[in-house]
Each structure stands twice: as structure tokens, then as C-alpha cells.
Image 1 (tube, one colour):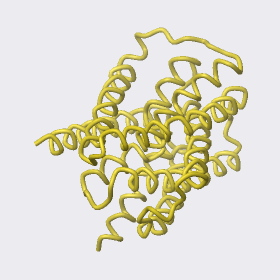
Image 2 (cartoon, helix red, strand yellow):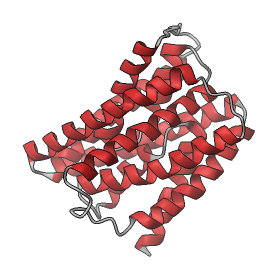
Image 3 (tube, helix red, strand yellow):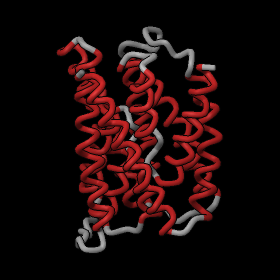
Image 4 (tube, one colour):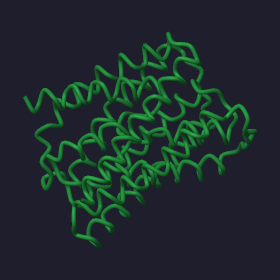
Length: 261
């Protein structure tokens, strides 16, 4: 029964993540915290593996569908997120070793996630009133990619709403274009994180028994979500994006309260 629950979790999260560009980890990570079956580091690894699987499928499907991808921004964002993913994983390891308490690290992660998601939600609801930037250039995209990679890896969320909102604001692109850029960034960030783990601690220290089923769920989710993204209107994708943010916000606040009591 437990395995079936995690399969459905991966399927739902990555379908929504592929549709909106959120990646899925922003749902997987806090919900796995709620379930409480694994420690912080293991949840981060499982979430990264699942999101990585989804990102591969989603990006390939978008390319096959000849979706317009702004490579001049997407590639530097992805490369920057590799460095950011490495830094984020190091930061997470430092925090875990510093506090040496699973509940404390969970609270820290969920507090950061709550603040970021709340800011993104408020921005997305009012973005038509906020004049976006029109930044351009490789170095700018690299710097933004580093920041997004750090958030992605440290929080174990794959990228989430932060990617989409920041890309919309800084590069003045529409939601669907930002979604594709976000998925590319997520893919590179997870490659960085998983490579860092492989070359340092290795994967043998983690209970990854649930990972194969979650990967299967992520592959299906990537296909379904990318297909829905192609068919849905800009307005529908944006509505789905905002609804998921509220869901994540509620879960994160619940995790904070539960671990403080």
C-alpha cells in the first residue's frame, strides 16, 4: 500500500509539475515530510531522482512537439543551475550536520519554502500591475541559474514556482515560455545534485527502495503534463500554477507547525 501511495504521489506531482513548469518536487518534498517515512536527506535524493526523470521526459516531449524554446536564455540558465545545484547540496549537508536534527532541518526548509511561495503567489496574482524587466545576456542568465539551482537543490523541490515567476519577471516572457525554461533549469540542477551525491557520499547510505516506482510515476507524469501544457491555454496553465502554490503553502505551514509542537 505504501508503494502505491508514493507512485500516485509521483504521478500527480510530476503531471502538475510538467504542466506548470514547477517540476513536481515542490509537491513531493513537503508531502514526503508529512508522511514522515524517510529522513531529510533521503527525501531530498528521492525527490531529485523523481523530478530528474520527469524533466527528461518533459523536455524531450517539448522538443519533439517543436515547442518554441528560447535557447539563448534556457541554456545559460541550465548551466548556471549546475553550479547552483552543487552549492545547494553543500549547503543542505552543512545545515544537516550543524543541527543534527531532522525536525529542525525540516522546519528551516519549510520556512524558506513558505516565504518563497508566498512571494511568488503574490507576484503572479499581481504581475500585470508589476512592470517586468527585460534582462538579456549570457552572464545574467548564468547568475539567475545559479540562484535557482541553489534553491532547487537545498530545498529538494526541483525548482518549483520560484523558477517560473523569476523567469517571467526578469526576462518578460509569457507563462508557457517560462515553463519550458524552468524545466530545462530543473533538469540541469538535478543532474548537478545527483552527480554531487554520487561523487561524495554515494547512494548506498540512502533508502531508495521507493525510487523505482516513483520514477515510473514521474515518466508517466512527464508525458501527461507536457501533453496538457501543449493543449491548455496560457490562462489555464497560470490558474493551475496558482492553485498548486496554495496547496504547497498549506502543506509547508502544516509541516512547520507539526515539527515545532
